[in-house]
Image (cartoon, rainbow, N blue to C red):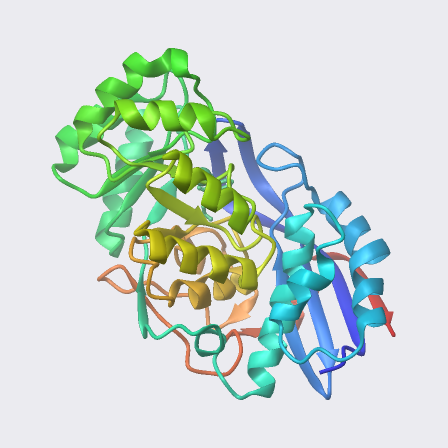
Length: 370
Ligand code: OSB
Ligand code: MG
């Protein structure tokens, strides 16, 4: 395929309720949608940036700049793409900026799958018809609200709860949930809020039979995580520390992580996500798909990658209604009462963006032609 046109859209959507992590609270989601056009077909991608560089260094502003001034010109310069795997290498002279890269690469994967008349899941090599999902619950100032959230999402079918923690909102909260909800599959995500000085807290968390503790220490660390992992029976799962195949390889070899959260945007696209998946499978490290509070477009990509066989743990890809009053795709992503999402069977990402809704939530649009 030869990409003839790229469309970027700045999007602004508002979450149903504020989402609090150890690094801050957000309710307004500023992100970018990408379209790539070739041979009369369109592929869609989502750039999963936030408005501020708290989770990662990229923002909606930096990603737009990198897309407009570097990646899109490189793509037009390149010419014929025979397989989307080529795009990761094409973009490799640009350091990091993985979410910007992934937004274009994902759209190219969608377009490629549509041209082959395959679902994106099948094009990636996935075989599952249903995927198992969990839900990520933010920190709540009012603890009763968190308990009510857990109860209500359990009723809706979600079978695994991820609870955000930060110093002062950790042990007591999780002990309370354990007491109230018994052996519910539960894990914690610290988003880098702790240091090795907090070992006593981790020792106590270690008695709660958590599925894993996600990114307890610094976002750029793999050494201290290895030290901490040796002290714990609970697996550590890295999120923020893993940006590439090489990062995953080093963290596994160091013993810093026993599970990896794969986010397509954080690792620079679907091809990279797939390589990390394959490496983890080879090393006996289970993976799951993380979330970035995506719209339906990004969510559809997450569903597709989760069909690969080593995504053996439920991910954070909850249904559209957990986030949005109205999602921008048709049909919405639905979670069954058994905590499953049925993988769509239409070609490409398998969901259609609704033009009026995409328009409604767009704050800017720019077209680029070769
Ligand atoms: O650490 O996984 C994370 C949301 C924003 C930034 C970072 C994270 C998260 C989540 C929510 O945990 C995942 C989701 O529901 O999309
Ligand atoms: Mg995380």
